[in-house]
Image 1 (spheres, rainbow, N blue to C red):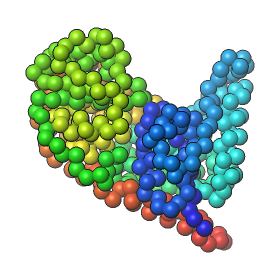
Image 2 (image 1 turned 90 degrees about the horizontal axis):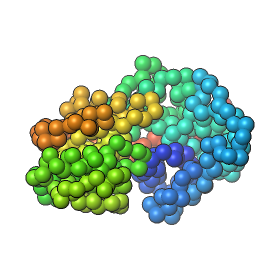
Image 3 (image 1 turned 45 degrees about the horizontal axis):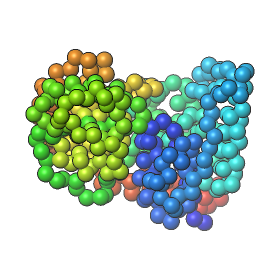
Length: 357
């Protein structure tokens, strides 16, 4: 019986999807299915071999006049009287039934993990940074057969619960550039990169204009969608828009500015970039915890969003440029994705290679 893995992919940003694509690429001949409510937006980057099941959203709309929310300790999101929530639960349950037998990798949702458990489906949960020791997370971690932290232990704030840490497989870092060879290129010491993801950012046109004004001797290369671009009036800014391969630009930059999303951080490590990190406000203080670990380990210079209005950018850039050339050492593990795939296939064998007593 061939292995079958399904990934539940959270709709916030693109990081969950890109991680799933990276892991799926190493699963060999296994059947792979993606479940998510925002997959259509990324259809061009999802390999054709992966089956996509498009899920309805779960947010109340005008058609839900009696919608309300329950505040429960064991769930993060518990709306009442929202028809889409019933449709979503039915769609996920139907998918797991149709795919049976299957292992579901959840990236991330407490509620989906618990629903899959009620459907009798083995689950794997992706661990993220942040304050995730509330009842809801702990229940999901208990349901999971395996927790995967897609990084080194050094960059994952530990849980105060030993059983959570011991249940976690720390894969080592990986990114979409892993296994694709070095992106060395010639680094221009007078070139600064700014990368903006799709999960929301405080890096806007005003911030970029202040950076470019204060660092007038540098060229500023901006990747991603930025708001308020009309406020950029300096001539040393180049907007590249959305790029399928940001490394084509970033490899030549001496310093890169970006947020503390996990995938951005891993990409900076894979590319060996000197990094200025701006941690955004995310649930469970995810990016704040990641940024603190980066700063503690000498891997980045941290600027908080509330400081952006009066940052002295030139000293920040020079401080970042002086970070140790080996500051990312051992963060990226070349075998990380293959190791994750081995653990998943091992879990499949444990569940389905012999009858349980």
